[in-house]
Length: 71
Image (cartoon, rainbow, N blue to C red; front, side, top):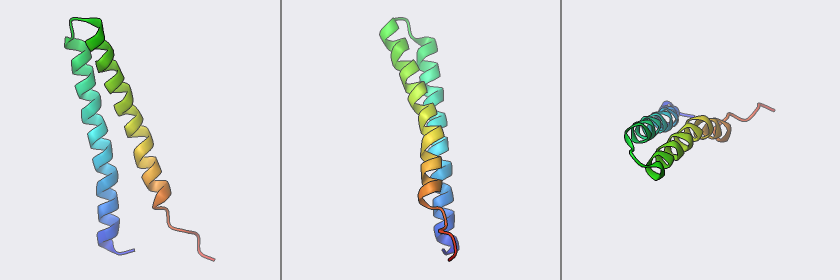
């Protein structure tokens, strides 16, 4: 694997973590500033889904891109 490929994969993993973090912050702000319960529920749902993205997506990238064992 070339250095460019490894760098692109690392950036994809970091980018997915960053996007999830931004989504979680957005969901928390939305839930905190909401005045009605449907909007609060939407903020909580966005936060939970963003946290799932942070936990699942980088791990699946790492598993997909893992170097195969040498024979």
